[in-house]
Amino acid sequence: MYQYVLAIHIIFVVCWMAGLFYMVRLFIYHTEAQDKPEPARTILSDQFEIMERKLWWVIATPSMYLVIIAGALMIHLHKWYMIWPGWLIIKLLFVVGLIVYHAVCQRKMNQMAKGIYKWTSTQLRLWNELATILLFAIVFLVVLKSAVNWIFGVIGIIVFSLVIMSAVKIYKLIREKK
Image (tube, rainbow, N blue to C red; front, side, top):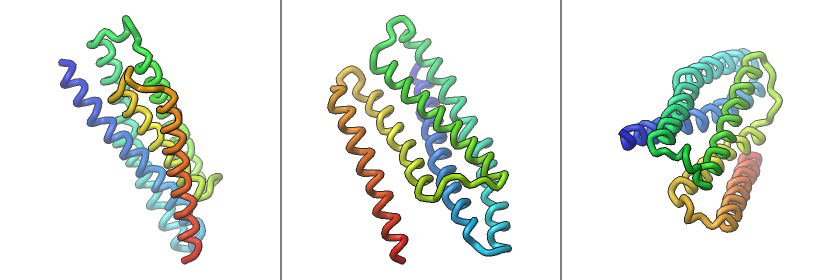
């Protein structure tokens, strides 16, 4: 039974992450559409709102709930609730971070639907990389478990974050030159 639940968990983690990654990409396009002249701005904004709403309520949010349910069931089936290994506690903290990330994205979607654009496309690009960093940390914790050297793990996540943020900045410079 555990293996089936694990498979479901992994499948919906992939779906959830795909939804989060694409959602923020839609936010970027939606924000950039505000610089277009009318009627393009309205047409694009209306289309992005439809796409965001469907992605959010049909893929991202249901996947998140299924990930949480399958994860809780795995903890129950494996009886981890009796010992709570350190790697699992840290992983769950990162998952809570991902759930907060999800909630912030939902708030951004609702703001944009009301015509409120508080973040620039560059800020949204950096925000998009936070989900990558959280995914990176979660996968390494699950795969390496107690073999993780916490110092190297933290240094690795920081270096990975700096590389991703540098890539976003370089991409912005290249876009501005065109």
